[in-house]
Image 1: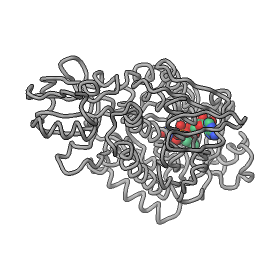
Image 2 (image 1 turned 180 degrees about the vertical axis):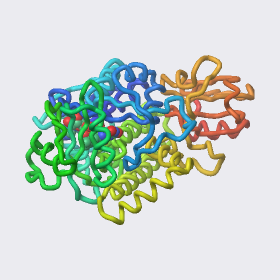
Image 3 (image 1 turned 90 degrees about the horizontal axis):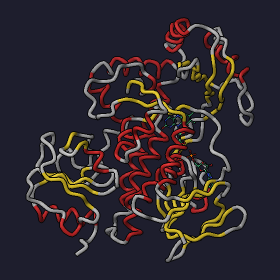
Length: 474
Ligand SMILES: Cc1cc2nc3c(=O)[nH]c(=O)nc-3n(C[C@H](O)[C@H](O)[C@H](O)COP(=O)(O)OP(=O)(O)OC[C@H]3O[C@@H](n4cnc5c(N)ncnc54)[C@H](O)[C@@H]3O)c2cc1C
């Protein structure tokens, strides 16, 4: 009997497994594929995800495998520089191959004690008052107290639960791949700028070591069931640019659509959904993996609390209450971005207008904070603007704030030096006189770094400790 079975060892499943292991939860990850993914798609880790990695001491390991790029040019690929003074110690984009981030997260989960079984596809799910019976494709049955479906956009778990996945089917198909080019970079850059004024979606971006990321419309490339070929890319490039830039030696090529769908529910009893299993949307803005990893970060400590027995009654349901609206917002911004990429005169005019508006720092900042997820504010009730937001990494007297969150526990930062976490000290750490950088007396942080309380009164603090961390131990 495991505490939690996770279906799917993609980035969401691996992150969730690691988060649960921080709290000694017995975790089994079942992954359908026998080998890790072989394609080499470069994805962008946005600011909030970099912050999460820093909060668990993983960032240094990850950064070595990626390439830092400015935190800009995401929204509908409108090329504007990043606004000044973004509120983060990690204000950049990390381009990293998806299989590498998946491997690093899986290794991290295994180091913490998670079991991963490959070649095991979840095929059946039954739940009762005590737990969940998971049936594998070969008929083997396993039991756990909870199951989380992190099994991607076509999630078997979601379908078995009968959870609706309403939204829009794919309307536009796009080809994307990474390959080498046969012409000098300067020649490409000038041509690309010219074409992008009239043709969207399109890009030809250098990724280092002579490799370019190529994105072109799939319109006219006939058989959707067949994987695209290099000849398909060349033909599309010639149609758009009048040249195929001598592309050759592809590392991978894929075709994707712009289906936009959101699960009606994230929880049915003892079974939950996270990542692409709960939401799919076009990749514009590079948010899907980030959103899934952030779902896992939100869910992990709550599910662990449920298993450890100290979770307040409603804690697990705050996962859906907090994350469903975030996904709704991401779906909406990708819908908007997709419209702005259309070559039709109306969307092109809207794009020109938004391009002008983004010269206003506040507009640019708002959009970047949305895409990078540092603008998220969970609804924790009335209170100062900081309540419900994440706290950025700041200097504290014993180093950096995020270093104090490596163990996935709550944290009270107390400038008054009068308060105590008392009977919650087995779940919540305490730091007196933390830093002058805080301009409020005391802050209670949840294990995911979101501000759960601000104040200076012990009774009020105790109420909030109970709200988030359950009954005190004594
Ligand atoms: C072209 C393109 C570019 C993208 N670029 C970005 C980007 O820059 N930034 C970004 O954040 N996102 C990007 N994304 C989105 C990102 O790839 C996904 O959102 C991300 O992979 C979702 O992670 P996941 O773990 O939720 O699901 P997945 O990565 O789909 O992982 C699900 C796992 O579950 C396994 N599985 C499936 N069924 C079962 C079963 N029945 N039993 C057991 N295991 C099962 C699968 O084999 C897989 O390993 C891009 C997507 C595309 C198509």
